[in-house]
Length: 175
Image (tube, rainbow, N blue to C red; front, side, top):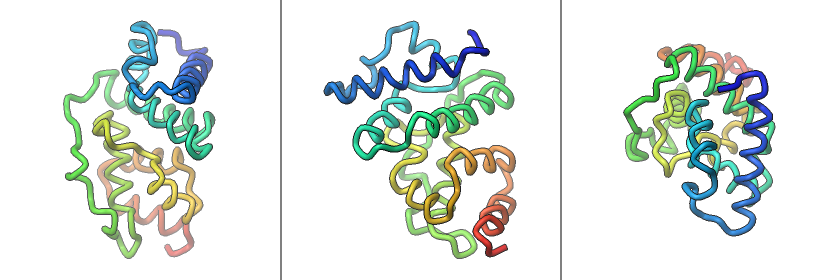
């Protein structure tokens, strides 16, 4: 696996997914060759994840490639540095995520997006769940937090909910 030009291959595959979706392909398992799928997997990316980003980009124009790449880079670093390139055998069912109206220190959606960020970092999101979905983006825009920035905060404080809440509160001027 080549690391120096990783971003170039990632952009090529993202564009392939965007174009395939625009052309009517609605099956994430048929977009990429076996070699491309193996490359994605080796970098901690599932075909479903890249498909979800391509779907949203086609539907509403976001997340764009730069945002996708930044999010993917945080996940990729976590995957290689913390998980030593070994995928998790766990999947977090959508019903196990905190409710959409759950609050942490008065901040609605924070428990949900934190749980999703942890699952994203570990590669444990259910195929029907997306980190940086429209609900996540609404929360992040409201608080002026970039999706990759929040994911990095969760990576840095993975097991420390209070540090994540404190960071968000300080970021939004409540801490």
